[in-house]
Image (tube, rainbow, N blue to C red):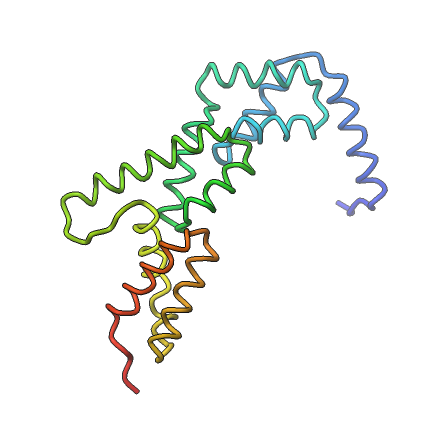
Length: 196
């Protein structure tokens, strides 16, 4: 099949947007929203923006979102919890970065505050039986991030430079300066200097 030119693609997109704008069947908009949710869970705002950019009428978008919320397929609180857990597991971030990311996803500030408080409480409850002295979720996530970057950081022979690089890594990933200072100092002090 021959490739379409840029003009042909633009005309096809314009026709698609016009057909979406003329849509009157709520089931079609609901199906479009469900297809968007197939890849991964999304926030209400992400679904709303996607459907609006697709050109569907605002009333049908609102109805589709309400129905998805009734069905439990859209839940900003559950989305925020899953996002924070995923970040803690795969790409650790500090509370500042998580707050920013969830805000960009359209999650309400109150929900973000609750989720981060629950995250911290869970880390404190998990840490209560251990003797590590870790004070909260940010420190746990910071230690996990440094552990993932251990090999790269250990190539720096100078202890002070290693601590500075660890601090910078944590700061770039949204950790509070106090957490960066404390965790990077612990990391640099606990790791032996590599032998030449």
